[in-house]
Length: 236
Image (cartoon, rainbow, N blue to C red):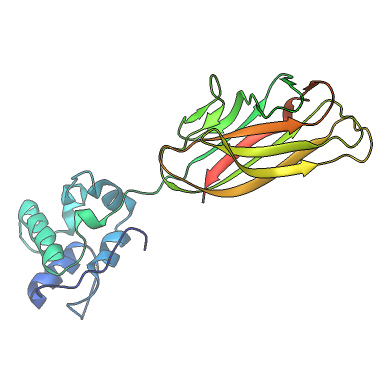
């Protein structure tokens, strides 16, 4: 159960108080040590998702209040019972985890100088869940949160000489990190392409970029487009 941690109860509440809690939350129990977190979660996501923002139980249906105890007092009793029993504490409830992801591609041909590692201009976003991919200035992805990320990309040249290498790689913090692919066409190729993906650990300040390199005797243009030159990544 994501974000919920079982706590060792420092004290035990009596059966009457616990049964009041169970009744208020719409459940039944013959065991006063039943896990209150399961009952809370059974009430629906609204309580869990708003707990960390200091919402209280007033959002719950007042009709669930047992007996003649006032709603406000019952809510106080419920909160106290949960804490005393070592159940949910608002610090134990993590925010729902939002996974990061982006995908983008190149819209126009870019000249790649010979024998020079060159950053690929990836300027059209397909999606960017957190608006952290820079498709205007630096053409880089900075997720802003530490974690493990699968990063992938592809690039294609418009023409290549016989046997001349074409390299596609992932740069991390402006330095070569891992190759996506290395190709050496056996004959002159109209559209050599390299494609691949790598798994990386990124800190909150790390960034990644798509770079290419070729060994032709003259500069070469990329063959742009959504299916030819692209860059993507997501948190795992």
